[in-house]
Structure formats: C-alpha cells, structure tokens
Length: 418
Image (cartoon, rainbow, N blue to C red):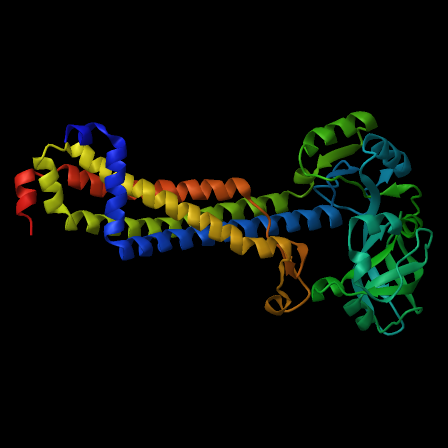
C-alpha cells in the first residue's frame, strides 16, 4: 500500500478503472459534455462567420477600411459637406496604398419624379468601375446595364422604386434636391434596375455617377467620402494616421473602419457578450449534470472508500482519485466535443447554406447592413480552444465538492454505510 500512497500513476489507473465500472453512466455524461461543447463550437463559428460577413458588407458598401471625409461629416452626414480637390486626395491615397482600391463617393437625398409619381430616394453617387471592385451591387441588376464612368445622365433604380415611379429602361426621371445654393433638378435616364432582396432598400436606392452628383451640386472635383479598401481589418488605425500625415488637410478627418462604423462595432461587441452569457449558462447546466453524476458515484462507493482509508490511503488521495476521474472524463469529453463541433462546422465553413426560405428573401438587414442569404461559418480558433478548455475545467470543478465529501469520511462510519 505504501507504493499506492506515493504513486500518482496508480491513482490515475484507479480513476480510469472507476469510470469503466459504470460504463453506461460514463458514456451518458461524456455525451452530455461533448454535445454541449459541440453546440458551443458550432455557435461560435457561425457567429464569427456572421461578424465577418457583416464587417465586410459594411466596410465595402458604407465606408472602407480607411475613410477620408470632411470634418464633421461623421456626426452630421450633410450632402453639402464635401471634400474639395477630391482627385488629389484619391491620388495620395493610391500612392500610400498601391495594393488597395480607392473610391470616391457622394450621397444625396432628393425627390425623384416621373410622369406617373414622385418618390423620395437616397442617391448614391459612385465611380462605377471602382465600385465593381468593391461591392456586388452590379451583380444585382435584373434589367438594363451598369453605369459607365462618364455617364452623367444615367441612373440605376431599385426595383420597387422603379415600380412606384412607373418607369422602364430608357425612360426619363427628374432628380430634385438641394443644390449648391438652392433647390435644383437634373434630368436622368433609367439605365438599369437592381433587386437587392430588401424591399426597403429596393424602394429607396438610386445610383448615379460621381460626375452626375458633382454637376448636380455644382461642385466639380468633390465627394462626400473617399474610401480605401484594403485586404485586412488589422492595423487600420495606424494606417489611417499615416494617410492623415500624407494629406496634411486640417479640413479633413481620416478614420479607420471602427471609427467610421461605430454602430457595427458596438453591435458585434454586445452580441459577443450576449453569446458568452448564453453559452456560459449552457455550460453551467452541463456542469450541474456532471456534478450530480460524480456525486452519485461517490455516494455509491462510500463503503469502498472506507475500506481504502482503513488500509492506509490518505483522505487527500481519495479526493485525488475523484478529481482525476473528472480530469479524464473532462479531457476525453472535451476532445470529442471539439472534434464533433469542427466536423459539423466544416460544411458551413466550406459551402455554407442558403437561408433564403427562413429569411423570406435573398438577403436580410442586420444593424443597417445588408447580408446575403447564404450563411457561412468561419473558424473562431481562439474561442474554440477557450471553450474546450472551459469545458474541461468545469468538469474538473464539478468534482471538487464530491472529492471533498469523500475526503471527510470516517473509515468506521463509511464501512458501516449501506
């Protein structure tokens, strides 16, 4: 018995043997831990994929990895708050980021009229050839053709907006809105119709060229925003500061994507916190089940522990056996759960799935960002490892109370236990 007292491998073998003695209960507990962890792994990967899609959509369509705009535009996006000498700013941004895509944009609010109706619309002014490299709006065309860069009289309308105006390809509409000094208007011809999948957006969106907006506002070489699209969201704060140093324009502010899209950043942070709380509750429920299983196992073996104590095994060694059972059970269950979670996540990472039927359309809006109906997961490696370690740790923690209970047994009383 002295060898047993001093040999941790022997205690480990005893713990493994105890788990095998009631194999059905061990397997049920393992299944509970594994499936709970697999669900958590699947969830964090789905969430990561959603966050990446949301950031990509918002960065490409609404801002950029780096955004240059007039001071005050972030707080009050007034269409008349413009960047003058926009071409010079674009050139400096392209020189700083030769691997990126730089695009100038303006946004107007106005009334679009036709012989049949008049509807308020949000007008996006773009450089069409650059926008094709950034967003997929051109792929949403259902009729007509995409704009040419030098087309200052063309307009693309959302499908619902075109329907309300009662116009078809080639027909004329009039854009009315606030110009440089007074209300002005501009005759446009419908070049194409887009269907984004969002009824609200399709009823509101109108796209013109940047040249058209400049002529409408009588502000040549101007834009509301200059967007710099890069390959990564990492380190953009420092890159924005470097571009600001290049520009040396006190009338402009240079923001990274987190500063330009605070609502998206806040939404993701809140959603991450809510998910952690929800998954922690799931983990706690599983831990309560493990605690109940281990405690039942201890109560069934009270006489056995009494005999071991009488033979000279120390209370701390009795407790160690129970904790080692938790170590083995938690390690095996966590490993199995991680593997199951990866296995069921892989098809969603590789191919995704089309949730159009569930969403009731081709896309959905989250925090003001349009997302495609095809949902993809993404590998959230740090979170997967953290939750795997947490599942293992919670299993071990679940054994502490039963281990303490066994360690406080009196040999005589334990051997009399029925």
